[in-house]
Image 1 (cartoon, helix red, strand yellow):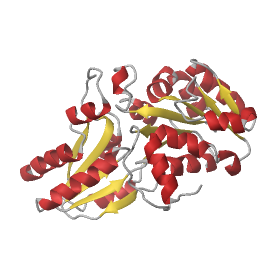
Image 2 (image 1 turned 135 degrees about the vertical axis):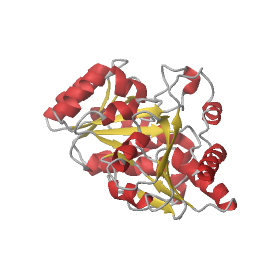
Image 3 (image 1 turned 30 degrees about the horizontal axis):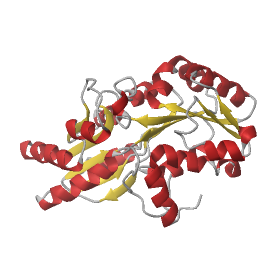
Length: 322
């Protein structure tokens, strides 16, 4: 993959789904056994160029997501490495039985790509808002869950998934013109969180789009005299427990995610903290236990308090209480 400044800007403009499609173009060079499947989302996944260049490696299974996972399982049994993409809400819930049996129980080498996770297609309503997918996938054994912070990391995660042996769920958040967190090439390792900012008072463990928003929040809190660290938790499972323990050196551990506060990153971190003596207070920032009305992506993030400013306000209030 060429992580040039020009490519990073292009990936950002295309959004995470487009960045995945661009990364797919390079996958056959990583492994000639890789094939790409989609559930009638060739254009949305930016797979048009891939289908033209590699027609023998591209399969459009139509609006039949469960069948797509089944076909991917058959391909994996024959030694191929299938990347199968659809909306995250369909990948995790409509296909839950197929994912549990073929990816979890059978431990097949399937890479399932959940497009538009969180609120990014919130204008289509709750049926397309994927706010429970991490919780579903975390409960299934053997599945690695990747949640990249921006489009650069989307490409990194796609490449890493291609190189590892085993089932992967790649969760893509954000919309077009996705803010850039990583402006240049860097080391990405599955299961190893990345420290982006040091701080001594509060530690934010963020994933997906909330990494960028947390960096904004940290700058605002610094102006209020609160020192905040920010860590990119791009791998939800297996969780980097060492990064969680390092966060315990502060007075407050905050998790930030574009996902329900039930069963997501916050829950995973809480499971680690519960086993530690004298663990600091934890605050979970995410989506409340509800389905909002259809609205634009920006409106939904603001309404749920998932912007840099609102995250900073929440943390400031909590920090004053402890």
